[in-house]
Image 1: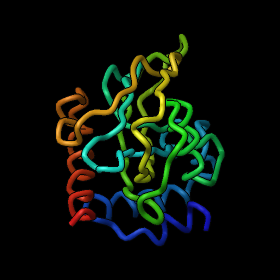
Image 2: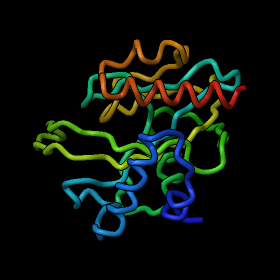
Image 3: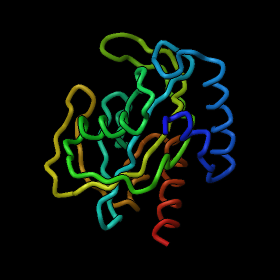
Image 4: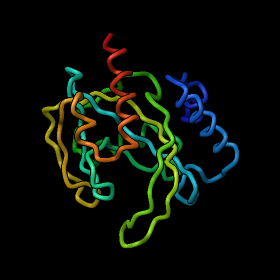
Length: 187
């Protein structure tokens, strides 16, 4: 199943996801280039929210542009398989090898604001990331690496401390939602 079908079949967790899903589907209809950064208004990103086997720790990277600890992920850059993007970015940004998908399909749909910033010496205007996130389990004993052109650190932290590590207030709600969903899965 391609990512567009995954988005269409995704059952929203709450009102935010319901509204974001509607806008994301509209963007897919309106824009031909929404899977690429050529779309300067909104484009797809894909992320991995990574837990250890005990499900009490999350793998985070210290993102150079946002100067904050965050999940792994990146731009679709034309790739229609958003799960493949999330896994590629996870492995590139952290070095983990032993991974398993914890849920079938997308774990979360979000529209995330990106403030204007400098990337590789050029100004990038504010825009939106149409974010598909996947819940992945990784082996916390895998050696970790830092992808220095994007991140300045990689580590496992306690899931309950995630929001304390993030200095991006708009992400606190997203991470809080993830933690609630994980608690329900652990049931």
